[in-house]
Image (cartoon, rainbow, N blue to C red; front, side, top):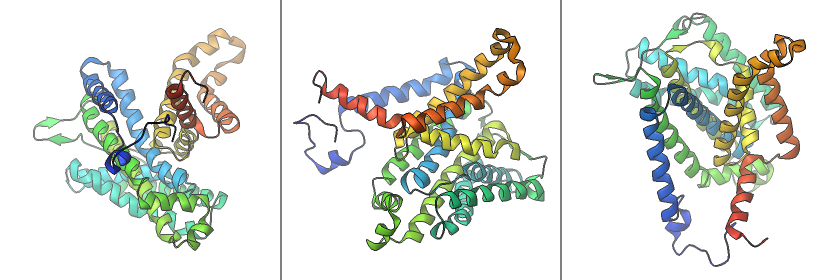
Amino acid sequence: MWRPCGVFDATYEKDMAIFRTPRHWSALALALLVFFLLPVFGSYYIVSFLNYLAISVIVVLGLQIVSGYCGQISFGQAAFMAVGGYTSAVLTQKFGLSFWVALPLAGIFTGFYGLIGGAPSLRIKGFYLAVATIAIHFVTMWLLLHLEITGKSVGITVDSPVIGTFVFDTDERMFYIIMPVMIIMTYAARNLVRTRVGRAFVAVRDNDLAAQVMGINLYYYKLLAFFISCFYAGIAGSLWAHLTLVCHPEQFTLIHALWFIGMLIVGGMGSIPGVFFGVIFVRVLDELVLVFSPYLADWFPWLGMAPAAGLGMTAFGLVLAWFLIKEPRGLAHRWEILKASSRLYPFAY
């Protein structure tokens, strides 16, 4: 689709490949080279911001699978991220496990914990499922604040990952853990949605009754979608805990879950590239607001400090409303149109 006449694939391997041409491979190699040289030549601000972006991408990738592809609305992604972060913290600080063992275990444990949220999904959907996941968020936060092993309201301090005598104790060093994990998770998600499982997710999203008539086990695939989504959130939570060196419930609020949903809407539902567009757009918007909001009170003294303090959420709400009305298919759809028009230029169609 979106290819000029005469451009085709001669083999099944090329048709299934994500990177099809030498130009694609060259662009990938150049992008990886630039990314992995950034901690050497880039500033601390840029590196820390990219770490934040990469962790957000992993979280929203999981949300894309359960909501964008399977059609199950979830507001519990921040809570599942907290479960992953606390699991990794407990395993490393209380039981003495290595970060490299705790990272996958945090994802797996969060995945099974997420099955609690996926269990009601066969009987409820839409608004009711969204409310159920919100309830799971508050139950999770209550448990984290009252269990002894989680440190209650104090939280848990976390040590930096270690390989031999090398300690990943700075944002620049953590960059070399977070970025490869993000790339691997993105590649896995991109391939997952092209498999039989991914097609089953799409069928459930489009019409679950028709999917069931076609022989798709709704309960199995809905639970699987929740498990994968929570696995992604758990991995992101573990990385976040070892990046910030602390786990506290205030890091994983319902507002964060709303931001993740907003990123998904802005980027485009049902699109892996849309995850990157949405995360980058929203995070850059948030950074710009942080830079310019202090000047708002100087430029408009009659507004006072309150509007400047709330400008971030205001800007996010306005952008989200604009995309819902004017571009409901997100930036990914606009990107596809741009690619198609550039390939056919100077012809109109």
